[in-house]
Image 1 (cartoon, rainbow, N blue to C red):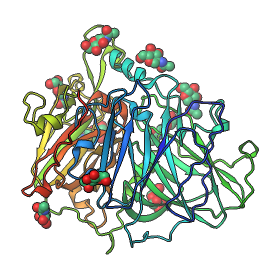
Image 2: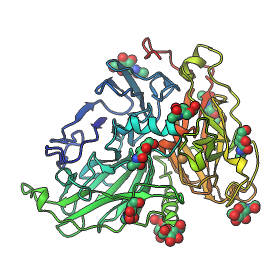
Image 3: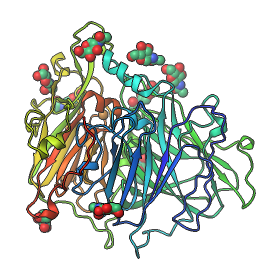
Length: 551
Ligand SMILES: *[C@@H]1O[C@H](CO)[C@@H](O)[C@H](O)[C@H]1NC(C)=O
Ligand SMILES: *[C@@H]1O[C@H](CO)[C@@H](O)[C@H](O)[C@H]1NC(C)=O
Ligand SMILES: *[C@@H]1O[C@H](CO)[C@@H](O)[C@H](O)[C@H]1NC(C)=O
Ligand SMILES: *[C@@H]1O[C@H](CO)[C@@H](O)[C@H](O)[C@H]1NC(C)=O
Ligand SMILES: *[C@@H]1O[C@H](CO)[C@@H](O)[C@H](O)[C@H]1NC(C)=O
Ligand SMILES: *[C@@H]1O[C@H](CO)[C@@H](O)[C@H](O)[C@H]1NC(C)=O
Ligand SMILES: *[C@@H]1O[C@H](CO)[C@@H](O)[C@H](O)[C@H]1NC(C)=O
Ligand SMILES: *[C@@H]1O[C@H](CO)[C@@H](O)[C@H](O)[C@H]1NC(C)=O
Ligand SMILES: *[C@@H]1O[C@H](CO)[C@@H](O)[C@H](O)[C@H]1NC(C)=O
Ligand SMILES: [Cu+2]
């Protein structure tokens, strides 16, 4: 397993930062030879565990890290005040991730305030020893990390937004592998380039570390074949354009089957909410055909540009999302629960709160907030995991509602003004060990309907259905897919629509669930699941590590 570590860079820095990926004969070896900010960890194969020592690099940031799944080990899952307190400047903390069934690409990132804008990387998980890819082995593989970049200190951006209750400053750029690309001022020198040989096939391991924007992604004149999502294989399907939300990973085969030339890969916003400002610029990287030993300088290239969908093309975005199915074959079977022990309906809303000091910059002088089932999550001052593990009272309430407190037309065009308000609370849902859980997420049109990428820690779940409008409990379950539903850890719930997930609560721990649009997370579009221990020691939360960062 290889962990790559990219830091976002400064525009126009006087360093040549383009990263040239060699064609890899040996899969173990991905070399970003000239990348400046790089840390590199190589661990052994799947089913071994991989530990990484996080060393504080910048005194002002307090990251906790997050992985996709950590079997019975919530202790190093990462989110601050959920499973740990932030790692303080100058201190270190060792994260351990134990992989079991995952294969493909996952990622890691800071999980404290908005520090995830600054530290993140791909985790590449190869097929098990003796196993092969369920597609012809690619000639090479390249991580493509999509990110956000602010000129301002990102922690100040967040602090201002929370202080004045308004919308946070938009980022100044989207990035590909830390670089904004040719269409931004002064950044041409650093544009990421990927070298390919004609006739060969490459595996792109695409990660969206974007903070607040879903993205469309295309490569000029090339088709993209999706083969994996969030660390699980999918039925291969070919498309011109991907829509990827923050938090998602996609494994994509790219065949270099076009004339010897240069082509842009490009990403720009899928912005589904009406009237909500977004970053409307385009980040680019260059796909360059080359013959061995002849690599022309970046400045001499004039690549062909792809066509990208319009920003608000929800039809295309959702058609793409709904085209993703599990591979579901003999070697990669699925295991979707067919019966349900615990069913929940959870509304997803952007809200407002009254202004207490007349200085608020939210809608009509209010403060922005956000909620799940009308509870806007408030982080406690010590982590919920410690409180649960050590039975400390008064840190959280166990009464997160299983359904919305009021039933209404969630996707209506207008609402009673009172509906916009929400309620603050630190409410969690407790689940029995190994119960089968169904959650229907229902987007609402309060303030503005929007595609919300909901992410659950500790689990991958099956997305058995989705649609537009209000979930209809008679008709919609008839459309559920139990044959090959995708198994993911982040699902875009369609704008003014719904999505149903199922999973078996077989990973005891304390698991954060949140919208992966960072502004929504900060406004409270979050909750926590506590999954109780099972009977034997093998199905209990691991022992608390001897060192956890203090609060
Ligand atoms: C993970 O690896 C470390 C270092 O090799 C070892 O000390 C630890 O016991 C392992 N943990 C698990 C859960 O296997
Ligand atoms: C206004 O009140 C909020 C909530 O109490 C507080 O967080 C914020 O700092 C205050 N803003 C200013 C500008 O004083
Ligand atoms: C950035 O946010 C601050 C504080 O909310 C605000 O005063 C400023 O106008 C914003 N800048 C831009 C360019 O939006
Ligand atoms: C992007 O937004 C800016 C500021 O709102 C606007 O002036 C510009 O026309 C927009 N560009 C595109 C390509 O939509
Ligand atoms: C997308 O935006 C364009 C331009 O603002 C508008 O004309 C069009 O109706 C919008 N389409 C959708 C599906 O919202
Ligand atoms: C929806 O996606 C599938 C699979 O990519 C594609 O074959 C189909 O043409 C798309 N339909 C529309 C209406 O875009
Ligand atoms: C809910 O509101 C939408 C949008 O106005 C409307 O099309 C739909 O008919 C309403 N549904 C019900 C059940 O009233
Ligand atoms: C959410 O809770 C607030 C505060 O109790 C209430 O005023 C509002 O009507 C509720 N909204 C909905 C949609 O239930
Ligand atoms: C969890 O439930 C499934 C389905 O009932 C069962 O097959 C499995 O053995 C259970 N696992 C444990 C650890 O109890
Ligand atoms: Cu959201």
